[in-house]
Image 1: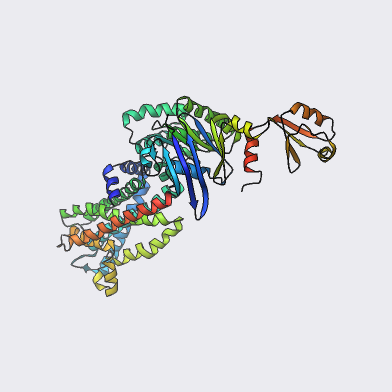
Image 2: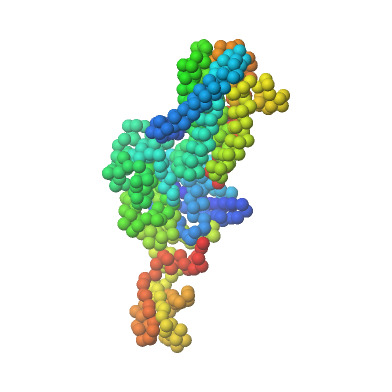
Length: 304
Length: 259
């Protein structure tokens, strides 16, 4: 099968600053592809290039067989977009938002009416059909934005941080809906900086920083490739003494961040037993996760 | 230019026109009052109040003279407000345009939708003022109905110019420059309130470059039944402003939104 997205050596500069620096990626039909990276990594710029909203300064880009940005309007007939800021139309009600958006695609009235009913139920917004946008909660707005993005029955849906700013219940509901879209065979591309979201939803991920892709793979591949199976976070007043004289042969690799020592190990039982013999230590033993990969690849310094 | 023409023929822009018309329908009461009520008050106050002192101007009563000027001024104001404040809100504040660009619509569709919508509102205000002018006896011939297509074209010209300003604005405050440097002088020196003949030669020469002057040169004889001169020139100037404005605005908005 043809890839849905083929990007080769995409580059984007703003005012002499290279924001995206020669990235290449492929997205396969039916998969959920995630772009993961700290603030300023170039995720949103990459998405904007995929949408055809930001002409690349270098490289080649094809989305659903169309050359982007030249054939942007043609490609966008088959595309759904959920922007970070929702940008719903505040002058209209929920159902009017869907109706008016359908007109932008030239969807006829006959097609429109059943489609809108279906989307209202998909977004669990039937009871809010006549509500104005300002009356909706954050989760409802996001669901409506997703429903609106589906009005043209798109093959590919692009979402920029779909659950940022939502409470846990609202996020769960969004994830369910996105999974439903995957089960219908649609392709999703999303950006996020939530590891749990990336791990739950994405078949494959690209970890980005400073405008380049650091690694691509499934969440489990990335974890296996970069991190030992377990992490034990050790802190407490006894840490210094343990560092000086303690038994540390189970620690394959460690990293001190502030007051905490991150110990990476494949033998967490033995390590925990060794820690128990020392006084003044607190520890948290857990399976290695995407967050550990992310921090290893992008570093721990704050991005502000 | 050819891309603009293709966008016009595609008729996709009509979805945007309809969107704006739907919003307007909801707020029509206050919108009409603002666009039409105010010029009417001025027309009555100045026409009767000042008219008593002025007597006849160019062979007609002052209120007749003024009414034709006000039709054009109101077209200018209505189209400019829509192309500035309303369009800026949709572009930069509500990001309505961004959401439109996620669909097969492109910048030219949006621009044409906005410009024709602004021209439609301008037409509406022209119709109302024309009707009131007729009631006041300031319309002398059925030829005055030709004012309506001219109002659309003039509205299009001012909407396009306003959209150029909107395309380069960083905030609502920037519009004050446009008002103070262009729209207000145009209102005062295009023959709305008094004939241009009495003005210094330089003012008269500058006035011939402004679209409002040409709109008035067309509308005034149409409303009063006086002979018309230089129809092609007047139409040509207004058309030129419309097209140049649309082409420039398309370029600037494209540059602003497709970064």
